[in-house]
Length: 225
Image (cartoon, rainbow, N blue to C red):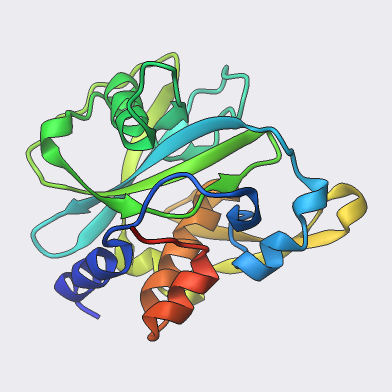
């Protein structure tokens, strides 16, 4: 599928999606809705609301995903590959406002370059956060300015690489009394995209490649306005 087709598919599948979901629709990163529901008893029941921006950059020849490498001194997810984002503060007008604010604070990405497309279902993390992924297209021309206390580096990975099944590697991880669960890694040029970040990308991929829109929405736990 060429970049224009991926763009159209993302727009179509996320059109009129709404943020924030009931507990029964929370996703465990990388798992389907049905798989996630089987684990709910083992996950935080009162997590901290947060949001991340999934920035899909519209380069001339392809779409890319803009990612950050978190600073090594951070309390949560130090050194990991992640999307820009953080807690939803009381003054934020919802997840998209929080994601755009955090992206500007962390990497200097200005909102005028960003067009929000829609939302993936909320993802529940073992660290105690409930994350709303905000998917957006980013037009070129932006300049980044990193907050060194939060972000060590940024890079872009082609969306076609992320969406190639051969690059999506699964393994088993122990989740306490719940037993082993499937988690995902995406290796790219010496970097390991894993955990919640890889899981959110996998859920976006499934949403896009499943041909039946209703089935795709069910797999991804999505609701539309």
